[in-house]
Image 1 (cartoon, rainbow, N blue to C red):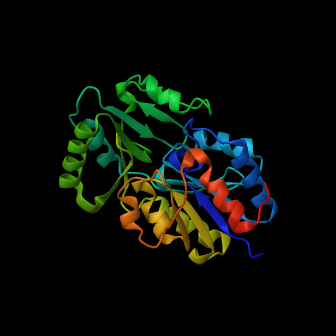
Image 2: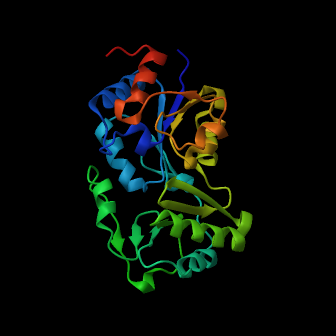
Length: 267
């Protein structure tokens, strides 16, 4: 069988509602690696956060992290990195916002936040990786892969409108959840990182299967020859990807089920 690249989002896609890997999913991915297929995770999460899932699998996995700002190979080496211009990052950091909207900065090695947000830590309980509350002087905009605003959807949407009006196409804005606005440099998304990974592997898009559930998966799914949208996906995602296949719910291990069917992996 010709090797394929299988790339999947994590939260809402590969992970269950508890934000963890199901044993069936682990067994399936290990079997596919044994067949010679390439595996990749693609998420808005930090690389160090995603690395914990890779370590649990115990097989080679490429990692597209921070919504495409960073690409790491199967040996944990950084392949590509794209940062926001420091001056632009400082403008974003200084934007007036509701006091309950949290400012997050993703650097290559660290996740910084402007104040405690215990609810966020619960989402990452299975990896043990979390944010560090930054001193104001550390929010200098240097080496930022992503600015993330998390809070009430209406408050965050107002920030989106302000940022689009000021910066237009100089930035890539997307949503990973209804509460989470993600901002990267122009041209940074999971799709561009996937393009770099396919070139590195010597594969074409037609040799790629991709799985996603939210708007920040749009470019990745549009590129892949075999795109899959979850049953629990954002309602706008299917309309953006009319040719994608629709599969089951993330909490029913639908990605693993589809892959077992597609590649003849026994239970």
